[in-house]
Length: 215
Image (cartoon, rainbow, N blue to C red; front, side, top):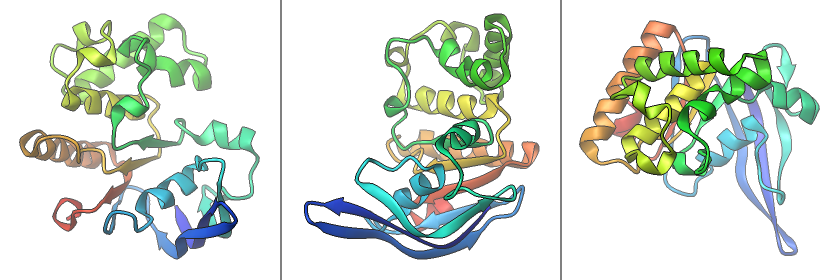
């Protein structure tokens, strides 16, 4: 993934606020790149620009985002939907913003498999159980049939990781994924993530406001 001179702005009333200005970086397959900065500096906006998930008043003004031989700023929304969750997965800071409160965990983890790969319900549930075990979810069989509100914050983040691993995505874009957790759980999950990244040769963009965490 290579980002060249990315500039993203937001229309606010009659003005334009530039949130990201001429940002460039690249990350090779299997590497982990930390994007670090203070709150409000544009870290998350950079990530959401890569995913093309900006709010209605946001737009990429200039620059390129090259992935797998294509510039993501120039492809259609239909093509982009084929990339989101399939080859690039976003794990947000607050997992509850991405988990449907009225859908069981097993269904949510297997959703991308059914959409992108045409997997059956049985196949998607089997894969959901497999990845829950991979991220060391306690009592994974029980969690499949639970709803997000029945899980702790740490368990919800494990579900976020499981959803990303279910599709065997090329890149994990992690937007301060553990910042809302207590320090002990945060350290545990980050250590487990590093082991999984090395084992599965995942490419990770890790957004954080803590230099120590990104290290």
